[in-house]
Amino acid sequence: MSGPAEEVDGRRALVRQGLAIGVATGLYGTSFGAVAVAGGLDVWQACALSLLVFSGASQFAFVGVLAAGGSPWSGAATGLMLGARNMLYGLGLVRLLGWRGLRRAGAAQLVIDESSAVATATTRTDHARLGFLVTGGSVFVLWNLMTLVGALAGTAIGDPRTYGLDAAVAAAFLALLWPRLGDRPAVVVAVVAAALALLLVPATPAGVPVLASASVALLAALLPRRSPPGPVPAEGSAS
Amino acid sequence: MSTTWVALLVLAAGSYLLKLAGLSLPAEVLERPVVRRVALALPIALLSALVAVQAVADGSRLVVDARVAGLAVAVVALALRANFLLVVVLAALTAAGLRAAGVG
Image (cartoon, rainbow over the protein chains, first blue to last red):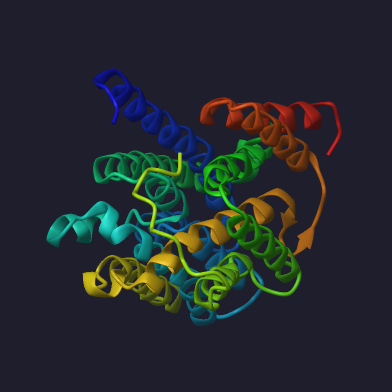
């Protein structure tokens, strides 16, 4: 149970968290815009990718294949393979968000790494919706704005790395992961998933290492349990 | 319309449909214990992989640079129960400071 003051604190924390991720991730849109134009797309195509695809790894993959001389179709296929990750996120989101019809159709476009991570880190529908919308919305607005800015200014805008934003995004993911490492199996899944992803980085296109790490979760969930499962803990009892 | 535009729009439509499909799974599918276990384990694996890749991947190479220092500071901050924003800002400041000093 939480009182009204804690309730307000909880909501404020979610908004702050969502905006922080939005700013850190959105600013990376400059690098996407610049990379897209440098890879041979025009400003409209760079902006269309950010508006309509709205999934960083898929967008970078499309541009990367084109820039490397691949066909637009192989670029699209790579991007779609990476986008399958977002379908997996729906598994954790659909019940938590509880949206139907038009709202669900609208929310679908905002299903990305960051919004899914923030929403699924909560256990209540109102918190999940707030975290999802603030994170997804702020990333969407800033990502698209900064794509345009990056595409127009090319590389002249400078490198977001100068401001340590790449480290900030890594820290943001870690901060989201941290509360989930409550028991030994969770830590094992996290360590094996990270190791697998790093192993795959030199051998696979960007985004595939993260996608492949989902197999670790599937394996851990499907392996027979050595001890009989205890009573399922109530929602929210972990923290 | 150029092939690039058509492929771009196919990618856009496919990406959206994948997202929508994830949100449109029937509820009875999600009520199976195995699905719940998968759903709980997925973000752990994916977030962990995202941390690792974001921290040391540079294209298809693995590099140790200022990002790792930023992440180490984030670990300390999290262990000391710092809030989310502070963790993120400290990591950014660490990496930016090292780069300004010509390290990493």
